[in-house]
Length: 397
Image 1 (cartoon, rainbow, N blue to C red):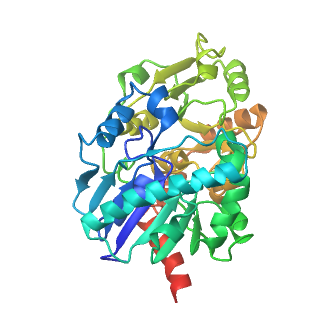
Image 2: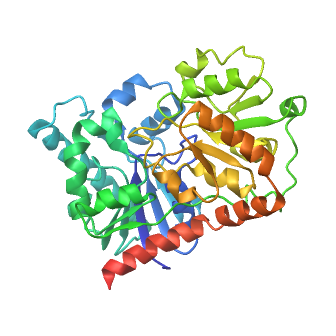
Image 3: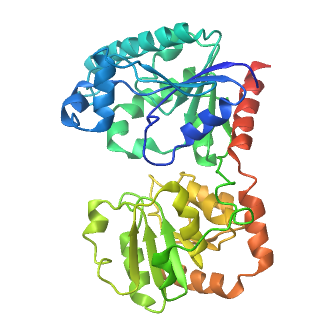
């Protein structure tokens, strides 16, 4: 699909500090189309509680008319910081008061989008909604896009903020969207309960950034002095998604392995017994461009997710990043991970992880390395966007 106007709304702002599927999709779309990426408007509670943050200061300058709401990112790609304030309504019980104020917020949001679309000359546009079930609820009626795509990539019903009203609103939103696209078969089946036009489109990866056949990644200094084998994890260290107890069991059971954890920590990890253990290294947050060099230094990569309703359907983008570099991977056996079953060692317990890491170390060979790379490198963002277009074309025929 080319030369189309596309408006993207969602739950992740353009200036988010972690990887974002929606941003990657927007960047690919903008190569052959015109794309307006809309940040969530500032709400009253955040305006006060996070008033000293850079993000909020920028949004306030837009509200005060001191800064342009539209920012050009590249030819064909713009970001909009809506110049409106919305009500903080999630504290309300589910019902008429919430619905009234949510519709008011939707109208304010739509007004800003229409203004930007008019300024950019957008016509007959496609609306792509990345899981924004509240602010996106009335946008099909308010914006009247040529097509409305709803994108599901996370089990938000397991997050209290979204579950409070989303259990009722999301099925309604799914039913009235033109097409639902998902990065997990689990989400695809969920979508089909309310809309037959629900499609699995997979997910992308910046395969070039993790291509060690093209790049000569230099081993970070903090890895050079460590005893091998090195078992590593890259990503946000959060107790909501990772099994701290399992990691502690691994570390205590195999003092001959060095465990390297790269990424920011939540309070649970900061206070965990993992700190101070001689075979655990916390490398801290690193820039995205530095992560491939760390992965290059790992002998085995792990993704010790909790196995629960929150993680069961999630497609972990780090798995593609690990595999794109040819690394053996041991991960928790969730429904989404079955997609990787031919290339990843899957387990559930600490005992599983120990035996599988041992197995991965012993049987690693050039043939397996090449298979992993070829599999992961087929998951480009370009291919992901093509699958989204195919889903849209299916319902437009």
